Length: 189
Image (cartoon, rainbow, N blue to C red; front, side, top):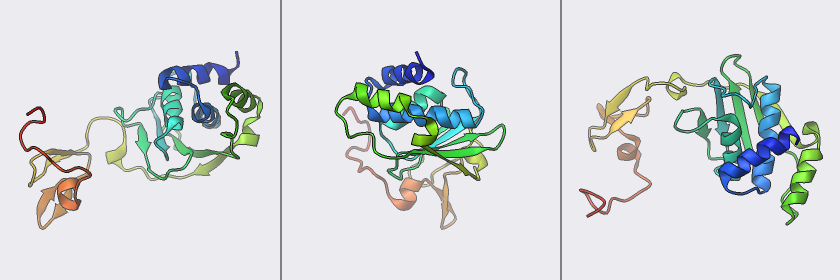
């Protein structure tokens, strides 16, 4: 079993099935980790990944790297692109990875996986050296600061508070929410 096949299985098991997104996410994650000198067999506590899409690829990234939203080591930047940036906090090196070409053209996932496995990284994965300025409030670990919204009273962590008219507000109260409250007490009522 190749390294790709091993991690494809792991990512597929985590995702629930193997598809082109899982296979390509596996390929680019392994290539990025290799260039950054990171071992996918160990938990890399000093790795942060910025995923540019909320699709299957990101599940492969999470499964292989161990990065997650809850550990603040997986970030979602909603560009709708099949790309991710991998940052080694120990070295400060960062690489953005994406895929060259379109590998979703075949309905035969076994054939797609075979092609991806057999294609050398340099012929499929585009790796770009990049620089990031990661704010202290975005790093893993305990919250750097927290505040309370003057309007809704909810807790705001990690520098996400907004100062408006000398009041500390959450972003929802300052700019509007993605939801509309239907009930004001308890959701189960």
